[in-house]
Amino acid sequence: MKNLKIFIMVTIFSMSFFSVSKADTAIFAGGCFWCMQAPFDSLKGKGVNSVIVGYTGGTKENPSYKDTSAGGTGHREAIEVNYDPRKISYSQLLKIFWENIDPYDQSGQFCDKGEPYTSAVFYNNEQEKLQFEKTKPKGKVATLLLPAKKFYPAEEYHQSYYIKNPIRYKFYRFNCGRDKRLKEIWGHGPH
Image (cartoon, rainbow, N blue to C red; front, top):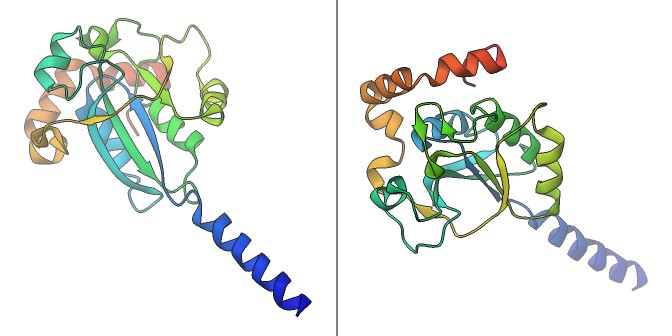
């Protein structure tokens, strides 16, 4: 009987331990959300479950693209990454984030300027704050660390824009100078 009780306790503990953290979310703002979605989408099947583009950080409820890009809402273009922490760590996601932004630009990202395009990491807990500090690049980093707020998915036509409109996406990305600047900072193009 004693062995049965121990077995039941161990089983319950194991079930609760392994059922926790099957999926988590990370929220990053790195300028144009079209350009931020692709590198994280490339990790699907390797720990990333989904990537949604949207708006966060501000006060306006249900913001639109027009509201956000005009400024004054406090929202930034951002991505919400749903991931399995058993397969990919938050610090690995941060590495991808850093290598796809200019962490030193306080006025926006690449050709997009203004608050909606400034970079930020939205943390959910103390561990994420710690990982931000551990992984941030050397130098005067302009990327903000902010508490997570409600994330509002962007309009459907913005989701997976780089797939739906590949020519327009590539034209925008090239003209914005994103890849050129990433190469200057990191010594390579996007990941």
